[in-house]
Length: 162
Image (cartoon, rainbow, N blue to C red):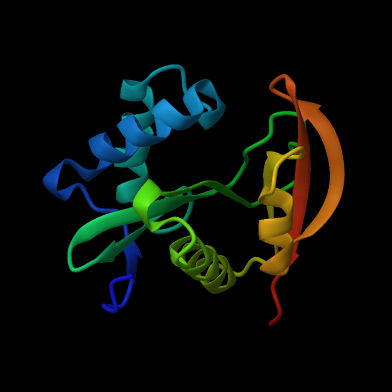
């Protein structure tokens, strides 16, 4: 594991990063990103790069190398329109998984939501995987399980302390 610190910052338009993130994430999740194509998703990322509020995207790097990203959204599940805001599309490149990059992105995301004045954040993930336990270890609580996009999902919440 590289000893150099993970740096987390807002997404910018430099060096084609939105296109790279869109391609990687769409390959992993396809339409569950909320978009019908890589190009649509890239357009969202480009728009989010200029946002001062939501949506926003945080990017993790080490020594300039892209490690992962996370989206901060106002709404995510179309079946839960009253829940807001959402942590979405937490993504870490394969060779960095298990090394704390994801947890660092989650912490930075929660800090950003707190700066924006939110007291509770939501996410959903596949219920029948190790992911609910991963988020639970970071302090998230499952508030329901429901079918969404053809799969059983765990809807989770994190209460931000003032």
